[in-house]
Image 1: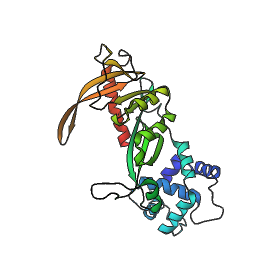
Image 2: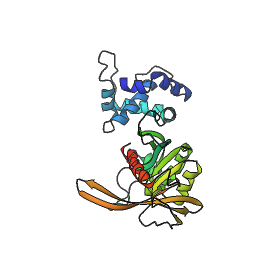
Image 3: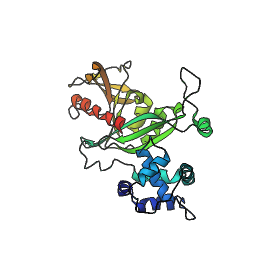
Image 4: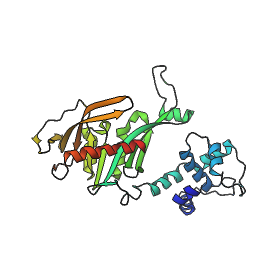
Length: 292
């Protein structure tokens, strides 16, 4: 509890509850403020049920008068709270998290960020199945837990989430990625995997004033309009002028060594100011979003 209150003080939580009209109207064993911290703690112990999280949350408070609660009571308290306070708290906390003071947060004066998506299981309930469907595989038409597609914009230097969007996985990560362009701006460099390297998505990123560095799929071979001195070349994705960097990258793993050709596209067109080799090294930072 102490670490959570250091980052998210009681005053902030109380203000969020007041603004979202989610404060309790009568005295309860589990006040709304406590439920907010329970939900934050649950994200740190994602393999635990609410009752196990509660025990971890209150483990250092033996001297205090801690009410005895059940898993059902914790679930009911979470249901009463609703999503509003959690969403509002996220909006207050999200951001690059001291990016100016953190080494590696900026590259050539630009905040280094990345967008990527993942899939998360959610509880298997009739409501979730109706909204999200169920995952299909080779064994059955609909099996396993319902899932959401979560797409996030992350500051690479701090792994802090700047923005996020999610919904049914049937829509795909680029659909939710479009929503994240609301948080992009000038003096950002956005690192993108090949799944986001469509003409439409890259154009929407460029329209915000942010620059991008995106990996292209192996089958995509843009035409060379003009070769530059560092070996990169200028090309076009529709009306958008881009610079293409081709490089050979070797990855050493426990399973052996793998070498492949990467093709990167960027809106940073000046080869002298932004050499190809430096951009290739920068692209490695995209893995921070995987860790985040």
